[in-house]
Image 1: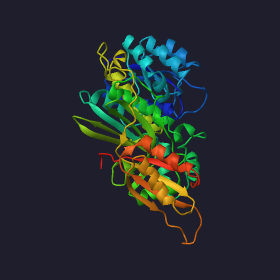
Image 2 (image 1 turned 120 degrees about the vertical axis):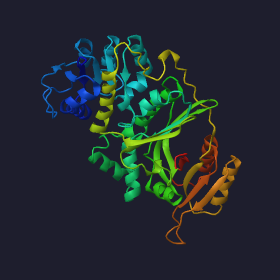
Image 3 (image 1 turned 120 degrees about the horizontal axis):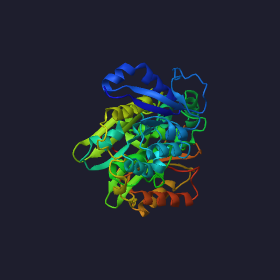
Image 4 (image 1 turned 90 degrees about the vertical axis):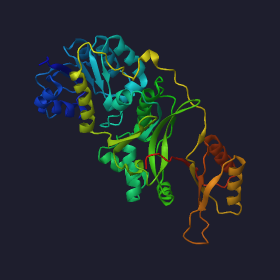
Length: 440
């Protein structure tokens, strides 16, 4: 039997502790499946004495993650600290630079420095694995990096943030406000005390930027993504979507066009009968559209200690099974030097149309004015309806719902801006894209 694979774990929070427990408790099974033992020989974390539910006393303790990466006698450095900068960045660089394989769950680090880290890994003949960085336990990285080789991918999209999906699901099923659902998500541990990174779409954007690079062979461009979170989604939007046969999801979408690659994260209306509309709670889903395979949809747990630890363990097992000196799969699917510069696609027609909700003063001519501004911007309307009021004599603001046919987003934004200038809107208008996925 081959020598033991020696690993060092940096970060012993929920995921790190879960991983360590699995490695200790299932040592014999992993030895059989991997063909060699996997041993935890070094660890580092913020606090040394904390009880993590697993005995790690035999492992060497390091106060500094970078020192562990430089000095520990390890074959694999497992980075579970998080954050785009140091200490994670310095430690991962140190490990790769001395030829130590790296497994990480850190999407922020990869979104900011992935190309640089991939180049260091290639230079030193080591593996950089990061399945857990995107969509938790769903093996989407392996699918894009290895399984779909030879396919030309046209689009990657999906639900990649469990916090947002939980909130939107609870709003619909229980008729609660965004604020109430966010508080419940925080109580259950699905949302952080400061949830902005999740609910504003940044977490999804980091994950999408990695998938874009794997799918289309471009350099990571996390700062070049159209970004819109879910904080402006109201219970009125949820109800209106249901009445029209849709459900609102926060989607990350990357697709190839004639003019470049389009990357966007925003709330989206998807048909109630589509598969992705059925993905509820903290579950994630990623769809890949390609020319040979067609469409592949993967659904599974997107977060949590065990789900993420399972993905990390899969990456470690791949290293354990690899042959010394064998050609490694490039971290980003192709050599870092072969990645093309990211070219942002020009604004084009969105074929799913748009949902527009307007709250307007109850005055004569408003309907006609709205229709005029839409027509002036070349927008064809599929429907325009006014939500019923409690009494016919009510002078409260009226809610008008518009659904457009396929049109340009720029045209929609211009039409809405001109309507705002008329002075009869109450509050801000709501504009949500409508997607009609192939998966149904």
